[in-house]
Image (cartoon, rainbow, N blue to C red; front, side, top):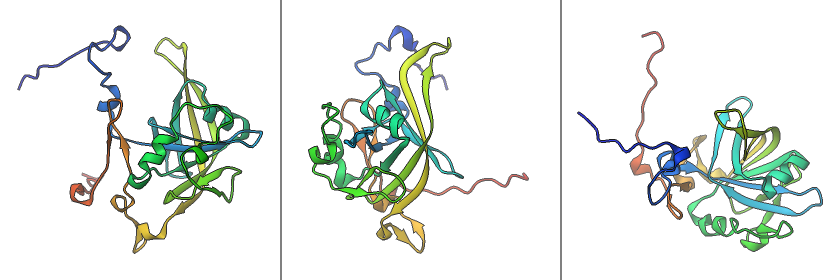
Length: 209
């Protein structure tokens, strides 16, 4: 079957009403990152370029377009927390995305409760059912294909402590759908949820075949 393909070179523009990149690579988990400045000001912000990159040790990371408060704080303190963004917390998560002064506490702005972490000096979102306490492993300025630095920064951190609401564990198995995670899609406002009805299972093929 011959497909009719829409093709473009990103440097020349996509020619569409909205850039399709982050609709194609999606839905994506949300990096709802809390940090604290060297002077003690709390910060909380969601990042849609986020994922997990390693099992042992567990390493997660997010990318920031521009040197934002989160990146500045983490570069100073070498610590941050990832908080799971869920459907009941979607509006609060969105509130924490507002562009405000670096002296503004987004926990207060979004009406969220700061909870002391156990291994890092950064507040966790108490209302979130899952929190990862992280220590910075790498802070990388991204480059283009010509090796030129761009104004985007990849923050990688090792999760040194993980906290899970026990209601999400059934016979020791974490129930992803029960947590109601929200996922970022394309367009200026699109998000998705997941449900158990959409689940399917695949078993990895035997490597000996």
